[in-house]
Every structure is written in C-alpha cells, then in structure tokens.
Length: 282
Length: 333
Image: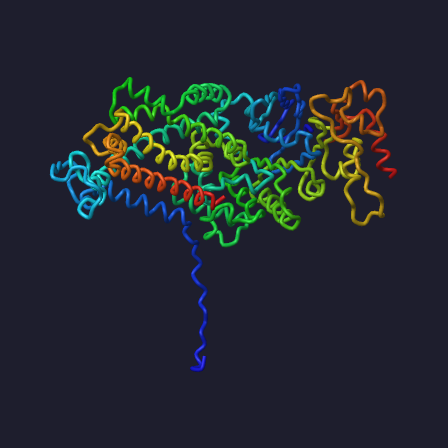
C-alpha cells in the first residue's frame, strides 16, 4: 500500500461450481464418443489386419495392449469397439426410455384398471431375471445386434414405465394438477406439459444408469455369441476371444474388460450428475 | 339461499357429493343449494372438514375418484352436471376459474410464469402469440406484480407466497372469467398480504363485474369482502343471509358459536367462547341434527329429526328448530 493505490477486491462473479461427477462424466463420455465417431484418429492399426509376425505379443511400445492370436492390435480393437458398444448403450435404451415414459405417464394418470393391468405386466417381467429373459428372446429371434435391441426393448420399457407411473401418481394429486384441470386443459396437455416434466427426473437418471447396464448386457451377449458377431470388434466378443488364452495372454481379455468398466463408470457418473442438476430447481 | 336473479349467475340445487370408503359411505356435501348472482361475492364458511372445499370443487366436477357428485349446477342457464367432459373444459378456466389455498403448490414448478399465464390464453382464446404475450404482461400489472416485464420469465419458486397468489389470480383471470371460485385463497398468507389479496379480489369484482364464491373459515375475511354468506356444518348449509344480517343476528347455534369465537374491537372485554367438541365424522353422522351433540339448545326433537333449511325472512334461511330462541338470546347478550 506504500504506493498509495487502494486495491478493491472485486466481488468474484458468482458461479456455481460444476459438480465433480459431471466433470468426470463429461471427460469419460466425451472421450468415449470421440472414439466411437472417429476410431481411425486414435487407433494406431487397422483393427482387422492380421500380423502373423506379431501373434499373442505382450503389451509393448509398439502394441500397448498387446496382440491377439491373429496378431491384431488389441488397442486398435478396443478403440474400434467403442463404436459398437456406445451404439448399444444408446440404441438399447432410448426406445425403452421413450416408450416406457409415455406408457408410464398414461398408466399413472389413468390409474384404476390401467394400473391394475400394468401391475400384472410388471409382475410377469420381474419374475424372470432380466438377462435370462433377454437371452431367451434372442435365442428365439436369432443372434445379432438387431435382435438384441428388440429383446431389450420388449422388456426394458417396463422399468421406465414403472418409475414414471409412480411419479405421475404423486404429481397428479398435487394442487397444480387440480389447478390445470380447473383451467379446463385437456388430458394430453395436463399429462405431457404439466405432469411429465415434474415426473421424468428419476427416469432420466435411470436412463443413464441403464446405458451402463446395456453395455454390460451387450458385452455379455457378445461373449455368449448372441450379440455382436465376430470378427466385429465388441468388448464382449473380444473378451470371449481371449478366454482360451487367459493364462498365457491375459491382455486379450483384460483390456476390453477395463474399457467396459471405465465406460460404465462414465454413465454412472452422468446419472449422478443429472440427479444433482435436476434437483436444483425443486 | 335462493334469491331471484336476473339471468345467468350460478344456481346450485341439491348438490351432493359422496365418497365410498372402506370404512363406509361419507356424504361430504349433502344437498347444498345456493345462488351466486352476477357481481356478487358469496362467502361459504365452516370449520375444517365441513365440506366447503369439496362443495367448490363439486360445482365444476373437479372431485376425484371415488367421489361421486350429483344434483344440479346451473351456470348461465346450462347444467354443468349434464355437460360432456369436453364442453365442461370450455367452461372451466374460461367462464369459471378457480384459485387455491396453497400458492406454493398450485403453480407448476417447472414452467415459467409467462407460460402458465399464456397457456390459459391459448386454451381458451383465439389470441395470437404476440397478443398473448401482451395480455400476460397486462394481467401481471392488473394483479399488482412489480417489475412484471422481468418477472414474467421467472419460475414460481422465485416468487414469494403473496406474489404467487397474485400469479395464480392472474392465470385465473386470463380469459376474463365470469365466476371465480376461491378456495381459501388467503389462508396461507400473512395478514398484511391477505389484506392486499382481498382488496385485489374486491377491486376485480368492481372492474370486471365478476362473481366470486369465496370459501373460508375466517369470519374476518367474510366480513371484509362478502355480500352474502352461507354457513356450512357437516356437509350441509345451516344458515344463510347477508353478511350484515348474519353477523348482527345469528339464528343457528353453530353460527352463534362461530361468531362468539372471534374477538371484537370495542366490545366489552369478555371470554372468547369456543364451540365444545369436534365436528362429527362424515361416515357416521349423528341422528337428527348433526350439530346436536355440541349444541346447548338441543332437545329430543333435535336428536330424532333433522331440521330442514327453511326461509324465515327475506333472504334468510336457517336449519334449526329453535332458531327464534337462539336469535333472542343473541339479542339479549
């Protein structure tokens, strides 16, 4: 202060700190999407190119994730698998989310017989383990990604519908719902404009978590040979490729597994971050 | 409460609402008849659980399952009870608007105020986008929200309780309704805000010739705003008249009890009287007059027979066998 100038602390612009979960989700999912859209930019080799001079090589500078029994570069295969696995995450969950939300909103709003009927559907679905049911449907329809989406869609919407129906049931009893009816608004307007925006949060959060589960499911089916078909690079398929060499070439199975864990973590973080963000305005 | 009135007001006859519950059948609104003339403010008074809010909702058939509404509600010559759901929707919000007790919960939390006002306009008027925006702003000014232009884009949680109630009134007024059904609109507000809202409602009545059916348990509010009043007990109307008449000369012991429990400025200091006992459960109402277990005037006849609501003077009705005695007592006191 000897110079006589007075320093004024300007009030820092008030800014809400981004939640850590959101930062994590953005980093992981951003990187995942980048690799899904532009695998060529990241993969050092062609994922399907055989190299008989480099079979089953342990991780090294030339092949950071090692090579498989055909000498294919595992890093490149794991990166190219992002395309299929991210696609599974989105495709296998979006249709159930949309359809389940609409059905759930209607069931919750109508109540009575609709709820009773829907309750039986829920009972029927949750009686079976999800994975077993999906495997049963896929084995009837035939293996492949398309049929996997169908199988997941046929069952998955029930869980979204159940969440939304419960939430709509609460919302429709609140004063603002009565007020909307008192204003003479039609049912469609009340359901989709007034109730649903207040009721959809749990479904959106579950949607994110479900994407992680969908990747696990896709990998499981890929592993069992019911999902993506070789030689396509898909993490479950990659793990299955390596299962015979677990003791001699662990890297073939382990690196795709790590990719699954990290991507799943990204979606879980996104779910948590959304739950936090969507609660703010309450 | 039947006064001859010129043309279309609200005419309710024998309105009955029952709920079938696992514990039995509850008649929450039991054969209510009342009229609201154009430009008139009628107060519907009673304790919690006397059925006054359900009465209000029954008028526009806003009662949820398992509630069943019967009777006749004539609005400008049309029977609302016989109307199709689609036709009724054109009446609700457009001709008959409703405001609720809890301004904290009666607005949609996720929509900005502007949308909620404009929504009523797009549902019930043919105004285009621009006109709707303009009308929304005008309504915010009518209900006295400062900095209306800026506040239109805010969400309900950014408003205080009194301001939210104003927003709700603005939404209700959007399509210039002829009748406002007000369900304890000031109960959740503190008294200074309450006074502002009441003045606003009176002012709107004067400016737009709107009728108001005002449900409240607050006799002070009735005295300050209403022209006529109806006192409800256990789902029935037990006394009607102009506010001045009823306050000056209550004819039903229950009304007398209600008035006795309100402190008065200027009167000699005296104990406030409370009404002994609690309102009866609506599933097993007492035989005869529902009020007899709490009534000092009750006789064997009251216990056996239910007194009908009868006219005893111009514009005055009461449902009590001993109303002359009650009125005489009031005068003596």
